Length: 197
Image (cartoon, rainbow, N blue to C red; front, side, top):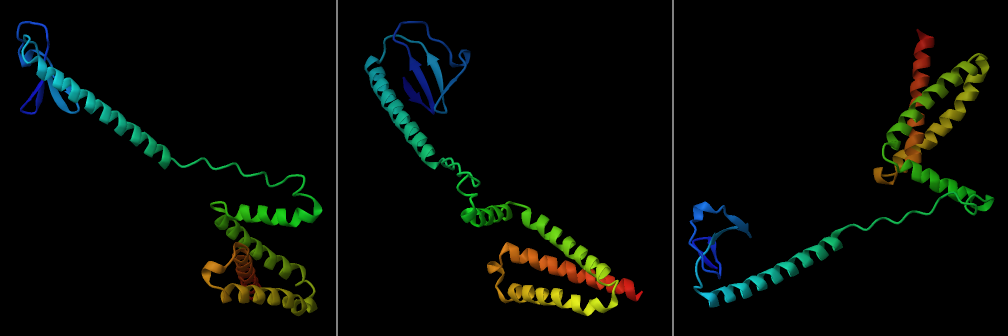
């Protein structure tokens, strides 16, 4: 085989009649078109040199492919190990129950989408509590100032803890309590507007 102007020409060792390049469709080897040309016993030593070069190229290619496979194996992320079940007989015993429930609560809050759903639920629950307190204890007119002290103290404690911490230090539970407080205050204002109107 010899390389001529960007194409590879193969020569067979058996004497045959010459064939035109256009009669044989080109084969592709490493992106270079290969045309078969049958001729006599010309340049046998050149063919042996070419075969040695071809064998070296194939060996290099095989080692390159192996190194790429090994690099690909190293880049693959390992499968995460299965976490142990949270609720086992030992973890639900009375001394360990609070720790287990707190861990399950933290895992539940870390799921995607839970802060939005639980925050909306807390806002609506606070609005409902305001309507319930004003309806239940508003029936007897003398209980209103007494009942208002409890939500006022709890709301101020939540506000103090929420606004004295930086944004990244606020826990999800504190955010939910703040949403409950905002919903409660909104419900109180709406009830006051209903009663005044």
